[in-house]
Length: 336
Image 1 (tube, rainbow, N blue to C red):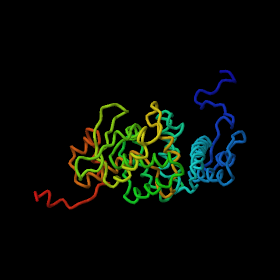
Image 2 (cartoon, rainbow, N blue to C red):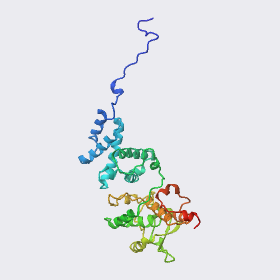
Image 3 (cartoon, helix red, strand yellow):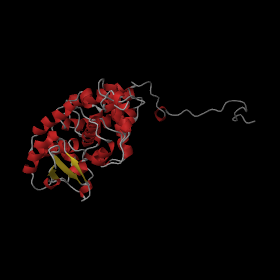
Image 4 (cartoon, helix red, strand yellow):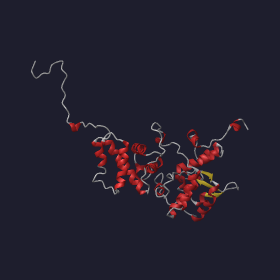
């Protein structure tokens, strides 16, 4: 046996890797992780923020307790983009007021985020949700094991009656005629008649007709994607005067303002310009429509005519149950 040959029963020796090739992170607050957070943003990044805005991002990521520098940097960049958007919306950088599900939803559905791949947008949502859970106390984020919020087609909760009233007040106070007109149309036709945003964009005064009886004030003819097909839906009587004035103000052209035929939601850009009190959640046409659905179910409207008015074949009634009014149905179930 050669003197250079290892003994048969001895454990083989392994080459020791250089320290930099296999870094060991000693806990979530290792010097490497903290250096990544403290060094953000990098010098070459043109971030026109004040010192308190940078500290907002850093402190929020520190609260997450990231385990590696890579995770920390991903959270920093995700929150930095959200923070830039929030500052542009004049939102306060208070976690419980800005890092809410509604605000994150609005952020991901506007601007260039709408063009992101679904997987990329889901990852961004996960990162923002992780920061939000670590920094908020009252924001209504679901439990860690509840993945319902990530479902793209889940039933979004309706607005409360008080919120609807405040939205109408805010519509009258919009800084421009275009924004005021758009927001009023959104409330009148999404909450008042259950129309989708894509149906509201093409409405003209010719699509609004008076009801045939005193019980019905105005009717709206909804045309999916601007086609001649559609359905006629009564508008809630609370909007009678607003509809009459809208027809006078806009006798020709789209009632909600100019729009582009190409995007699915061409009015999203206008919606992003609305000036709303920070006490209100973002204004979402889907939630306005869901509010209309729940209100009619609470009024006892039969399911078939409601489906026809909504232009759908079915409803996720099981998902709507938490938002429907509880009534004592014992007498009705007994046939009285």
